[in-house]
Length: 372
Image 1 (cartoon, rainbow, N blue to C red):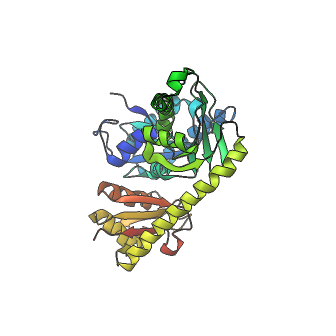
Image 2 (cartoon, helix red, strand yellow; image 1 turned 90 degrees about the horizontal axis):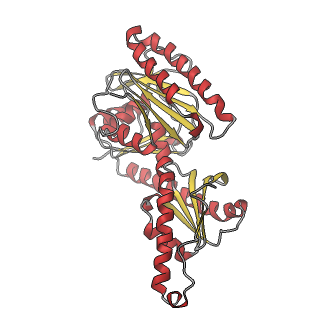
Image 3 (tube, rainbow, N blue to C red; image 1 turned 60 degrees about the vertical axis):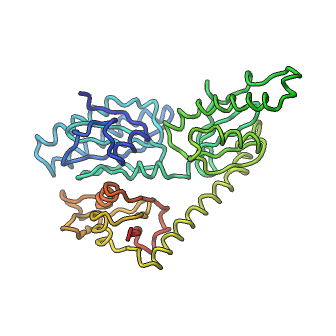
C-alpha cells in the first residue's frame, strides 16, 4: 500500500479537516504526527534551493524527534520524510510546502501562502496552513473578461504575482462567434455562443482553482460578468466584481481599478467578524480565557473560534489547563497548544476563523463563541 501522497489543497482540507478516508486510508493514524512548513519558490533558479532547505529542516526534525522518542519509533517517521523529499517535484512549487508525516504515511501539499520554516511534533497535525490558505483574501485570482478575450492573473493585494500566458490563457474567442447576418439578428443565438465561450473558459480556469484555492474577482462589462457568474462552477469563491474594459489595459492600471474593491471587501468582512464577536460578548457567550477555551473545545461547546494568524501558545496540557512556556524555555515535551485546540474544535464540528494579527489584540489573540 502506498504511503506517499501529493495532495491538492482541497484534498488535504478534506482529509485533515473533515477526516474523510478516500484520500488517505483511515488506518494511517499515529500517536506522533509531524507537520513541516517551508517557504518555496515558483521559478528557477530560486527553486533550486528548495530541496536543500527541506533536507536541512528534516535533519532538524530528526534531532527533535530523537529527544522525544525511541530510535525505533523515529526511524519510520524520518524514512517517510526522506521519501517525501525525494518524491516532490520542486519545479512546480507555489509559495509554501506543508509536509505531514507519521510512521505510516507522508503527505505533501503545495500552498500559495507565506510561511516561516518550522515544524510541529505532537498528537495532531498542524492544520493552520490549510485554514489560512482556504480563508485568505490577500491573494486572489483576477479574471478579466470580454467577448473577445479572457485574461487570468494571480494577485496579492495590489501586486501582480503572475499573469498566465500558456495554452489556456489568455483565452481568445476565435470560435464562439458568427458573422452570419441572420444569426447576428438573433439575440439568443449570440447569447448562447457567449455562454459556451464562458463555459469553456471556466473549465480551463477550474484546474487552476483546484490547484490553488484562491478567491476570485471578475472584471469586465456588466453583461459578460453576469454570464460568467451564471456559468461558474465555483461561484462561492467569487468575492468581487469590477465593471470596465480590461482587455488591453496594462496591469498597473487594472490594479488601480480592482484593488480598492478588494480592499473594501476585506474591510467589510473584518468588520462583520468583529461585530459577531461584540454581539457574542453582549450575550455573554464570548470566552477569551485560554484554559476555558481549551475546555470548551474538548467538550464541543464551540460555535466559532476566532484566532490570530500567528498566535502561538507553546507549552503542555495538565488536564484541561494550559501550562505555557516562555520563548527559549521549551523542552522535549513542549507542544504547540493552538494546534491541539484547533483539532478539538474541528473534531466537534466548530467553525474556525483566522483573522489578521492585531484585530484580536484586545482578546489575547483568541476568542471563542459558545453554542449555548
